[in-house]
Image (tube, rainbow, N blue to C red; front, side, top):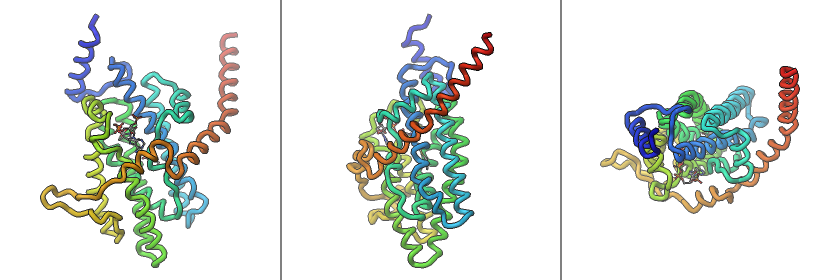
Length: 313
Ligand code: BYC
């Protein structure tokens, strides 16, 4: 019988050789816990993330826009469900992880605590929020835990569609009249910095990164991904005449990356702690939905019990 230290050593060797860890493989308890934390928070973000955009389905400016937005919001539900299923492979139940969201113990992404004030916000979310998510999730598609990595492959394909539809909304508005251009610019002014923050605290304030990188759950640090997101987004903004609200943004000829201004980390932590503009509203929406769905769960349970009794008889 191998002791824990030997098992941990072998586990780390598997990780270092680029092997994929599957649910029935031995894994350190802390690896399991970290994945449950990260994956469940990711799943919650997908589900809570349906709310800001769901707000505009009934007010989409054309039938085409409504159909596309409906499909996108529905995709987010699907993402949440794959990731919840992936999390369950680690030995926790759906009820447990959803319960942690509803009790306020588990987090979800800070970005979804901002309001969607105009139609242009649908463009800014698709372009910036999905854009930041793709940068993060393309790396997660190569992470060491098989079920999470595989879920990310499909999710990234759908996120690319979301990113393009958002960019197309903004590009269309930027070809419109002054009011439409101003609306697009105003949306980007409001969503840029929260999107930059969404990639997580700066590396010096990120307690989980070192451990997650050692286990190849994270392949890059938060700051590395933030830089990648900014480098990709600036030329896209220039292409359609959008100005990014950062006076310090400048291509550094030496590093070939964009230098950027100071992130307001006080705002970020304030939102993470539950004091953003829409935290209370989002949690209320999820708690109300849970309450409204109770009878369906009870009916399904009663049906299961009846079926089991029939089989046993
Ligand atoms: N918001 O040590 P750190 C989408 C927390 S949805 C809130 O760097 P880690 C979409 C962090 O949890 C896609 N909290 O953590 C859907 C930790 O607290 P705990 C969402 C944040 O795990 C609908 C503490 O701060 N994507 O695409 O190494 C419509 C210290 O942070 C945030 C994911 O969830 C934040 N932004 O790195 C449109 C990706 N950032 O848990 C689009 C999966 C940090 O110790 N997650 N915190 O109490 C990850 O990649 C990583 O967990 C993070 C954080 C980069 C987010």
